[in-house]
Length: 59
Image 1: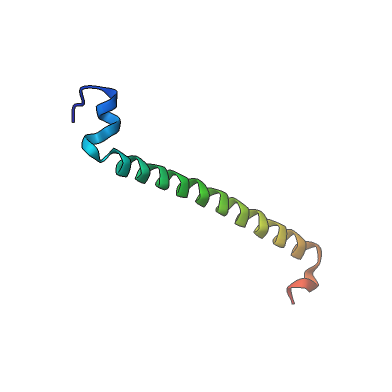
Image 2: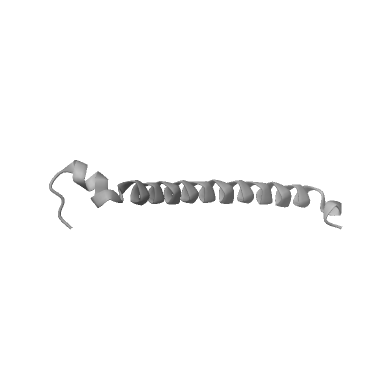
């Protein structure tokens, strides 16, 4: 596709709001997923460390 100006590019033939909001929501969800995975990994590491220091906790 060839747009005559940046304004036409951002407008995307009238579908700009839909297109750019979809990109925004997707980027936001990808960042949220990375943050959630990191938090889960941190909690799992803490639990494994606590279990290694106190084996009776696992019983």
